[in-house]
Amino acid sequence: MKRTVLIAAAVLALGALIVVPNAGADTNATQVAPDPAPAALDAASAAAAIGEEYNTGKAGNPPAFGAGDCRVEGWGTACLHRYGDVIWIKDSRGDGFSAEADWENYLWDGSAWRLYRRGRCVNNLKAGHWAYCNKDFYEDQSINIYGTKGSGLRIDACEIACVEGYTWVRNNE
Image (tube, rainbow, N blue to C red; front, side, top):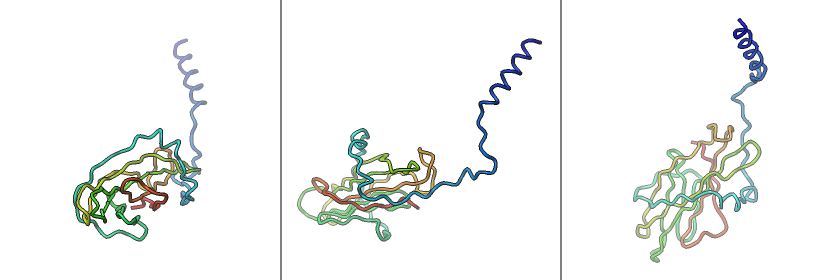
């Protein structure tokens, strides 16, 4: 009998610690993440802590890209095909150097954009050819690891080293 009373008291005490969400609250409602200003993505210290993914691209024929999905530089063009999360890179110069698409994937944490992943897709094919790297990023409207919605990529086309600049693409397909 004493054991039953003790168990009942423990269950009641534990019940007081359980947090029950407000039944009237919309638990699926999340704030739409704003597009960041370039300075908001300056994350050199965060980037140092994140490993870089390196992929050699495979030859392919690119799909049509939407407006704002590509970064064009003199040595190449880097694009994100949002449907399927595929990074594309075209080598535009026959100079013997490989073109690469450098990318950084940022997630919205509810108050700021945080660097989550980064990498490069290298095109070792001849000039004029496209290569692709198939990735898997959080979708912009999916709940991410921070429990919020928001996923975007900074993409740049590089040869030996990237210069200042990038294209910001929300991963919303």
